[in-house]
Picture 1 (tube, rainbow, N blue to C red):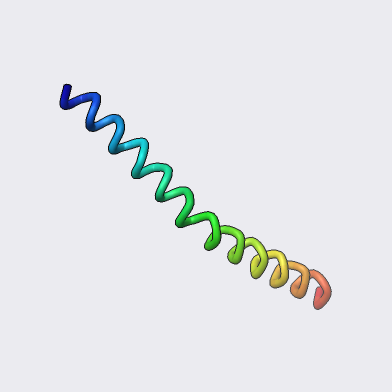
Picture 2: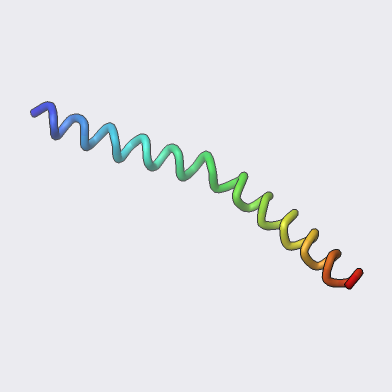
Length: 43
């Protein structure tokens, strides 16, 4: 019983973490791509 509840809570926490981190990953990818292309142009 407790194991089932723990599994459900773990899945919910994982989903929330994914949704929260997605925007930050997108922004980091945008800035990372911009910085890498800028460095590429300088070199």
